[in-house]
Length: 331
Image (cartoon, rainbow, N blue to C red; front, side):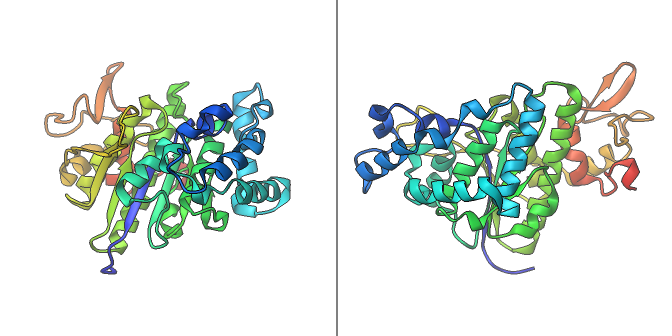
């Protein structure tokens, strides 16, 4: 374990950055105020490339198909670093100068700046931007990531699915697509919750590599209905990694000074969670009653059609506390 203080930032991503950057020209000063250095030139550059920031006409009617196409494009930009999407994105980022964007441009940049004093992530730190699987959500994540990386797309990474492999990208700004956040159906929601657990394992690995390091959960952007699940992940992580190593923050959208508020976190007993979750199958069902009087009834599991099954929170917790929590075909 390396005794070096580092910060790891998990940031939920919404689409406000696109709405703000594509606002009518007269209203751009709300997000790039006159107090900002070179504000006239920066606003002019953004306005000139307004249509290229996000093209709504590129959206497919089929949402699932559109999600996969958008993800493929993001892989071309951030993983393969080739093709037309890559070259046009490089040119756009160089022109609109995200390195210079003030915190007012998005909730995500405000969240980071409220803690760091700057919208940029220091080179020794790591940011994990969790985005929905919509085209607009992924584009918003790319723009926020570019700003946090100081305009350097070579420092931005992309994972089309949540994975603990994020721990291998320390020092970078990472975009992670998390399908299922819209909760269109139960199966998608469960996969999203398992994905949050996988991200938690990656953050755990990063924290274990650096004594004294901290993970900050910035819960100001993204699907409002999903934020309680991110908060649940933060609380589970505190039980897993120890008190004082996880903090959750939020900024109210009407806050004038954009000051971050620390959210109090409960700390769950790790051994209790392991005991209670160990006998749940991968599909979430228990063959028998949960042990020792079912103390986590209603939180980690509930009774469903005469059987006990994990709740969405339970599906987040299981990968974190049960070592063998892998799909049957991978065991």
